[in-house]
Image (cartoon, rainbow, N blue to C red; front, side, top):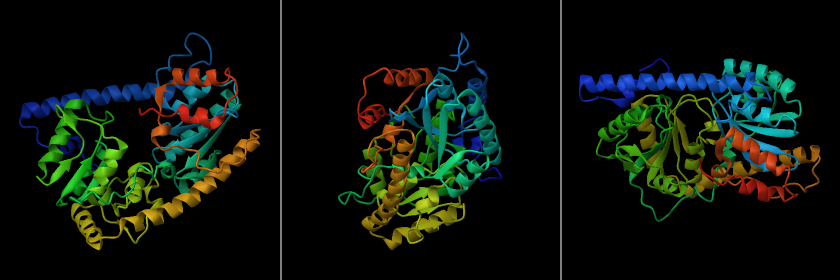
Length: 410
C-alpha cells in the first residue's frame, strides 16, 4: 500500500498464479506506463508550441476532446478539463478557432485543488491571452476552493458543480427492483479508486470500466481479483473473454436499485458523477474523506464520511443499510438543492449570452441534456472543422444545434 492509501499495481492485480505469470504482468504494465507517459508528454506540450498555421500546425489534430456546442451565436463551447496540464486540449482547439470570437465553459473533471496545476493554469492563461485574444475562458468549478484558486491566478471562475448535469429522469428509484446487495461501487479500474476498502462488505456489486490505465491483460487480472473476494461479490458488467463490457445508463440505475448503499472510496478525484447518480436513485452514501467536490450535495442524515479503512467502511455501510431511509426522501432533498443551483447557472448563462450580444430570451428550462450529451468525443481537428462549418450555415435555433451536436457516447 502507498502512503496515500492507493494500491500498488501488485495489490490491484492480486496473485498471478506463478512467478512467470507475475513477471509477464509486471513487464506488460511497465511497457504500458511508458507508452502512456510518452503520449501524455506530447499531448500536454504540443498544443502550446505548434504554430497556428503551416505544415506543422496539425500535428496535434488527433488529440481526442469532448466538446458540447452550447450556443452557436454567440459561440459558446462546453468542455471538460483535467490532467497534469488542464488546458492542453482546449489549447489545441483554441489555436484552430483563434480568428473567431468564442467562449469556453470549462468543467474540471479532476480536482484543480493542486498548487502545481493551478500555477500552470495561470501561465497557460497568459498564452491564451496572446495567441487567442478573442477567446474567453470561464471555469465552472466544483468547489468554492477551486473557484478561489483559479481566480487567484487571473482566471474567470464561478462555483457550479458538474453534478448538476446528471439527468434525474434516468437515475431514479425503481420500486419494483428488490435489494440484493449491501452496497454498490461504481469505480473504474484505477489505483485511485481504492476498491480494496470495500472488501469486508458482505454483499457487494461493482460497476466498473477501463480507460486504459492498465493494459488489457492486467484489467483481466484485476477483475479476477474482484471476483475472488467472495461468492457474494459480483461484477455487474458483462464479461467477454475476461474483458469488461459497458452498461447503459438505465442498466447502471437498475444495479444501483439492487443495492442498499452507494460507495465513494477515492481520496482525490473530480466531483464524481456516480455520487450524484446514487443520490438521485435514492441511495445513502458511504464516503471516505476526499477533495474534488463530490461531497457538495452530501447530507449527514444519509451520508457518512468514514475513515479509509475496510472495517470502517463496512460498519458505515451496515449503519446506513439498517436505517432504511426512504429512497424518495433522499432523492427529493437532493433535487431541491440541485434545482436551486441549476437556476443560478441558468441566470448566469442567460446574462453571459446577453453580454455577448444575443437577443435570445433568458433560459426558462434547463439547457443541458445530461452527461451523455456533453461527452461527444472526436479528434480536435474534426471538432474544429464542425464548429467552423456552423459559421457558414444559415442561422438556426441555438438549442437545436446544441442538442444535435452532443448525443453520441464516447
